[in-house]
Length: 275
Image 1 (cartoon, rainbow, N blue to C red):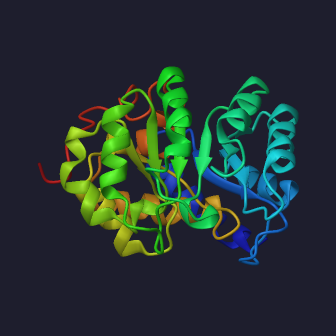
Image 2 (tube, rainbow, N blue to C red):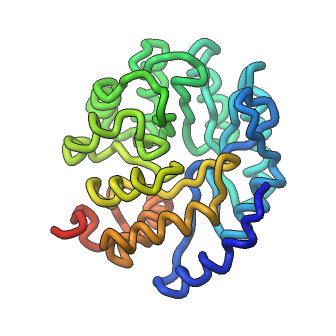
């Protein structure tokens, strides 16, 4: 997709500087119908993941025709290539619970919600059963939370309290609601952020203000690549003073845990830099 091979040596230098990294990219799209115009085939996504030596968590881009077939495609991809795990993208207007159950039975590991893309609020009652299911099965729920989302910090807090075993991952550093979320993050252990954002200042603020146990690496293919975003995230993590173990957790260790965000791979996971 990009000339990302030119960045590979920078990532190699950072890997040499740190203990071994088990890189897991929590935010990988595939699809060829998104109105935004940035698209990615399955082969393009896999090529980018291989270049970064990363595992990917994959879900569909926006699909105006609905998500049953696109979800099947990412499920097929996960079955055919052990480098990826599938999340099911849901539309509250199209039998969200039924589609979630169908995809989970077929091997999906969690759920993707895009309030902006499907024009809904996170407190939409049509999602009550979906969040209850995520709570019952301790599922990750990846939530688009970049610029342009409706104000939903209160909705995140309410869903977090009502469904404490679900793991709510705010994509794009939660940039669209960050100031409403991070000050109370210690009271919401099941709310996490991914790093899939273009602005280094925002990622740096995330690393500086939020406990590392609440942060997961993500790139946002096709809007960025794992190599590009790993270079940026690793450099910022070192600059703000995160420990090697905390960096290992953010970049993949916590995603590999049975309970992401509850830290099986980092020491002093809740310590913010300078504390």
